Image 1 (cartoon, rainbow, N blue to C red):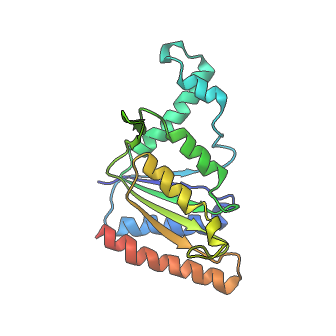
Image 2 (tube, rainbow, N blue to C red):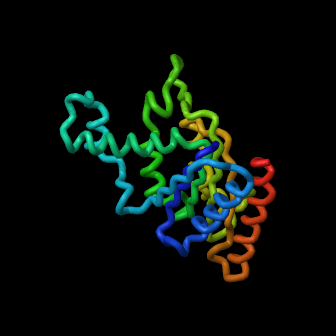
Length: 209
């Protein structure tokens, strides 16, 4: 059995293309034989607070000395890490907002990146990711097109940041599914979704086989 953690981060709710295509990816994985539980977590401004000084302070207080408020903040962060630790496959849906990921997804990463739990530093001060043997699929949607030597492509901090942070906590086996051209026009947007679906068939099914 392989458990799936499915995380969405769009402000668009059910209209989100990244969430829709990522949900199709989860369905494809299940049909391909990835059995186990599917845990869904929709990151919104209401349920995913940014990392605060109070939370950082609570993490530094011994468990038997924490106040009720401090313990609640640590418990929340612990629950996010436990979900990630318990997953064999992680599916992330991440639209591009102002050239990078949504702040809710950044907040999630801030909560799960914890020294001694998901990463550590070796004697040379180099970070070592501690989350191993997990497969990650990141479905990233974008209004335009990025890549190559295009000046616009140089402003891509979505996939670049996600790949770096995931590797930082040990998640190195990452496959990106791209949904591009979503703000170019209806035809371009539909083509972008169709290409993403093709990527799922070619990449996800090949890996799951």
